[in-house]
Structure formats: C-alpha cells, structure tokens
Length: 313
View (cartoon, rainbow, N blue to C red):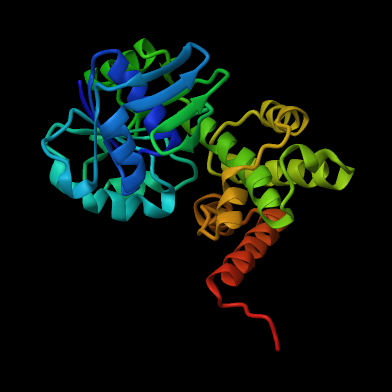
C-alpha cells in the first residue's frame, strides 16, 4: 500500500519503519525538522527486540511537501493537534483514502469526519511501546497489540487489507467489533495514570508508594468505566484495574506522556482524556469527582506553564 503517517514521533515512526520494512511505500509527515532531516540523511534508526537497524526505504517531509493520495492515512498526532494536522494534509486525502486513528483519548472520529465519511474511517488502539531517543532514532522494546475497526462498524475489504498489512509488519493487529470497549478501557488507564502523574510529578511506579496513590488510580478507573457503561459500552473493569496495577508495579521510572508534557512546558492531552470523560459524565448524569478534580488540577498546571498563573511579588 501507499501509506502516509501524520505525526511521525515515536509511535508514528515505529509503525512507519516496520511497514516500510515489509515493502509498503511509506511517507512520514511531521513538523519536527531535525527528526525529518536525520531520517532523510541516515534513514530511520529503529531499535527493537528484533535488532538495531537503519531503515532507508521511506520518505520524510513536512505537510506542505507531501504529495499524492495514499491508500491509508495513519494519524498519530496528539488529539489536540488532530484538526490542524488534518487541515495541513487535506490535499492528500483522495476519494479512496482510508484514515486510521490509533490516538489516545476521545473525539478523534468527530474531527476526522470533517474530511472523510465514517465509512472511510478506521478507529483503534495500540499498546506498543515506543520512545523517541533523538532525531531519527526510535526504541521499542517489549510487545504490544493493535485492535481496530471501521468507525461505522462495517467489515469492508479495506479493513481486512489494513489489518493484514499491520499484522505482517509484526504489529499483532486484529479487527475487533468491540474496539470501543478497548478505547474506553485505555482512556480509563490514561485518565488514572497520566493525570495523577502530571499533577504529582510521580513516575508510574511511585504511585504505589502509599495506598492513597493506588486507591486514587483505581477510583478514576471505576469512574471512567461507569461513564462508558452508561453509554451502553461493555467494559472489563477487573481487566483494566489489573493493567493499572501491573503498570504501577512494573513501569519503574516511567514518566507517562502527560507528565513529560508538563515537564517540557507543553500543553497536555487532558481535554481529550479526563475532559472528554467529564463531558460525557455530565451528559449521562454519572458522578466523577476524582476525574473532575484531576482535570481541574491539570488545567491549573497548564495555566501556570502558559503564564496565566503568576507568582505574587
């Protein structure tokens, strides 16, 4: 396939590199000039459990430099950048282009629908780990999966084609009619660990230092999944809680993306995660006091970073 990946950070580069290794025509699209230039000059350095190598058979460019209409447009930007990213590559979206979002949070389908019909949107989740070590250099160690489905629920031929391409690239991809369950469970996971770490500056494992940290994480999971259930989405509370507990026990030293954003002085994805949950909770009449409080605290942190909150003199 001809594949364009918008948002060529750690995850976008990992997927692009693995797909290029399988012979697909891949273009990485990003605004990180240093990253793009490193890939153009030296290839993408990809260090996985299968080895450390440089992948040269892919193109890297900024949105305005991208050309042609891909069969698949894979979106890996942060949710807060989805609208602007798609506007920047709107000239690439052809009449047959499928758009796949494996992004965190909620609300991505609604933004993508401004550009293509639901029948051409694929939505899913991935648990693959990836870290951008430096320009043109990505690490991914450990295993993950991809679960996706058409946004309109139809199992059309392109769905099978995309699933097969990702699976052949070693990304353990399956079509899953229950993908919205997986999406909400990942939202619960992220709403708990990301937002607590963002306001506490704790690494994930440090949340287990006292019972309060662990109990708060589980309380957020329960609130988020209650909102999902109120919308008729079946979720696995025990399984999700077990994944949170495992992360607290095993993700030693890990700084989740929301904490990384706070430390770097960037906006976070809290509105697409905790914010989207709170909005859905209000519509459904489900109380979410912990999730709401964490949303307010992250907003306060962002306001301080932006200079809205200043120190009295």
